[in-house]
Amino acid sequence: MNSLIKLEITRALRNRKFLFFSVIYPSLLFVIIAGTQDGADKIPGSGLSVPAFMMVSMASFGALTAVLMGNSERIAKERESGWVRQLRLTSLPGRGYVLAKTASAAVVSLPSIVVVFVVAAAAKDVRFEAWQWLALTGAIWAGSLCFAALGVAIGYLASGDAVRPITMIVYFGLSILGGLWMPSTTFPQWLQDAASWLPTHAYAALGQAIELGDAPHAKDITLLVVYFVLFAGGAAWLYRKDTLKA
Image (tube, rainbow, N blue to C red; front, side, top):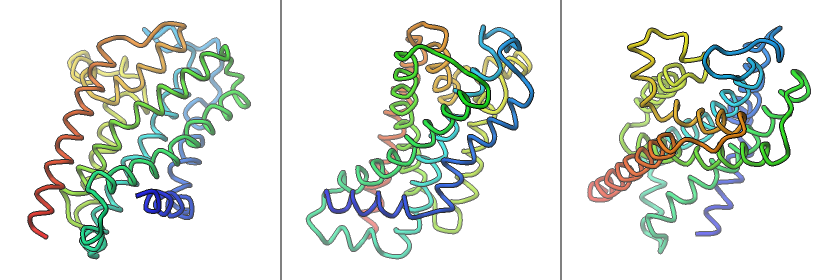
């Protein structure tokens, strides 16, 4: 299992296109969206400046890109090529395959978070206490596991041809409606109410609470845990179903 984890991590780090979209792309979006805004410009209803708010949003978006896009497409293609079937002939347990996929995605998601933080501090002079930087990194990195499980589930749900459009719809839908690209306070009230129950909204809220010097809200943590259980449970069920077909 350790050998497979190393292989998956190496493959992820060698994929330059994937690294660009998961590591560089979110930081570029941060610079574009933050634009000429500075610490004096506030996001209504959040208590945060535009650069600080968008920093957490884009760091979360980058981690989401790494774990969701990386897992879903790769798993679907490996199922179609027969690689997963070959692995089943070895002594590798099913959980080992899922763990390897999650580990490789987590390795890429961490740089995407850190790069956004560095760009925000250097370009927009975003400043926090040392404990806040550490807490932000840990919370966003840990929260990405929820979407890693979703990526595994989509990879077992969709075929190689269908996985990309399905993933893109989920990816952009969760990002936009969850408030990662724009504050959800700009939405109509009915959409704000619906967005507050999305995993991406709770995900970004973890970092926003830490930026304000508070502990993450219990509702947001509970939502992410519930979604993780649902996504992981769905992935496990789809894996067993796929095994029976093989």
